[in-house]
Image 1 (cartoon, each protein chain N blue to C red):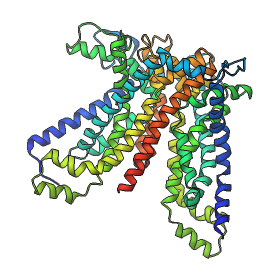
Image 2: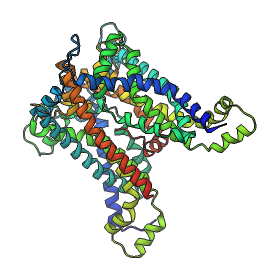
Image 3: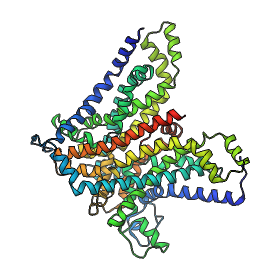
Image 4: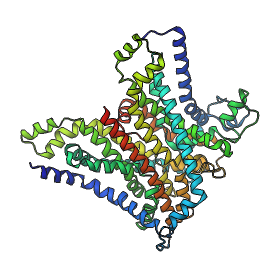
Length: 281
Length: 293
């Protein structure tokens, strides 16, 4: 530990406070808006802390009364869960065997570059044919159709993450088991997959967050409560004629909670995944 | 086991992924190419072959050129700001101070906040009548009358860049911090004994460790910023007066709002080509840094 002058110590602490304020202020303000009464939010000068704490909007959005704002919101919440869950599960099913194959067979390694290349594709390059195909198959405005489309993002991404995960498991363990007479399926089931469980969990979380965050395809391919996801529902609220800003903020808080909780608790795994190249802004 | 069998087995294991990728990525991409040479509509008419008409029309249109400039401006400015602030934040987080581990943990917040929620949040902050930015600037005396930050062509793009920067600089900071922690202590200590200035230490001792990871972050962020859609759609829809319209928004309008699938497809492929150039540059950089280390 290098020794610092008092001035340097004060400067470092001041800068740290500034950074903390920059990071926290917008998030905290979102939360304050969600618990402020509408009058507090439109008084001038603006009240930065509500006179009385108003939690009613959480009740409004999470209620299941027919034809209410809550019904639409809860429906979109479940759609997001369904679509993200199905797409993540399907992505892992196709990604795990391929990632293992690429990791253990250098001669097919080039195919991984093809996979990564598709991940760079802008969604607009696929959107028009996908729209026409979903329309022809009757899968527009359908959670299965949207989950299928999300595989275009999640499958390459999870393959990439799982491949580096398998790379970190020494193949000597598998060779040793082969010498002892184990079959390939036994090796994978009893040795490799249990060892890869933490990487699989990280890949699943990342994939889920990506799907939870997705907006472009959801905007194009869904139109009502049957399939609309949370991101589209929030964009509707923000862009619509809703005059209660607190309600918009509340929807934002609720949509942000799952990823924020995952983010804070899975910090270490997420950061090692991020710094290993699985970067998605 | 022969190597032949091992290769065959690998392909068999990859079969499910390959089928999925061909069905939902390969085929749509090829079909986008086909559509780009037709005057197909999104719904109804299949459209006839029109050769390069769509490309000529799109590339020569004032819309495309203006949008390309806006997109480049957005990508360059927001990524540059994210890199500079991100590295500064990482250098800070690498110092000793009270609450360091808490602050490091907080850095994940903007990254974890869904993009649409981030856009909505900043839209509320910039609100012309009741927004927090107007209120704060007025209350500390920097602003006389409330302004419509997203409603004026002069400030809208900057306001978007700030929102994008806030969400993405912590990611750069975390990547840079991981790289900083890999700098061996004895090297920095030795450089101090040798009397190197703080700047010289950063430039010649620390920077070599940062360069590789930062390069990766730089190119990936540039590609993402170039494809930007969500943030802009939610905050301005490309307005006011198309001053924040980026390429992805333009493709959306052409193909889906105006339902011109053919010219929309040609525009989408032009964007894809531009992103591919960035991605190839990325691959080259990765190979170079892998060869160097």
